[in-house]
Length: 106
Image (cartoon, rainbow, N blue to C red; front, side):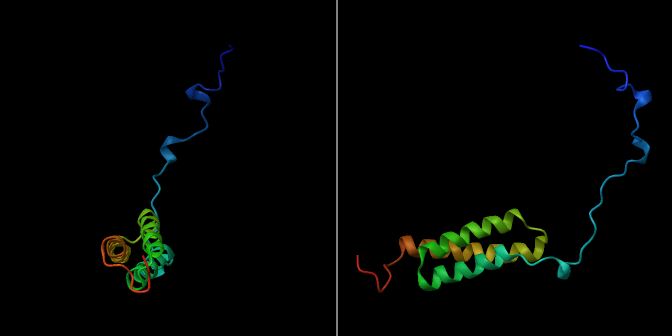
């Protein structure tokens, strides 16, 4: 192996004194992009509870997780995600542990 001299501190072109930490720009809550996953989670959650569709409740839970992972605005998004999660969990509870759907023969 040959040793390289250009790794020595004297030949280092970087300037540590000029480095500044990244500061994210402040964006107003009304200027934030729409949280589509949270909105879709609410829609699927309501459909799962009202129409007793298991698939809608499961999809609502999945979209809740996605919205939770991509959350930007803590106060507004958390309310929407928690509402969607309550709908999806309520839908799953009523679908699996509640009385059977009226039109379903089993």
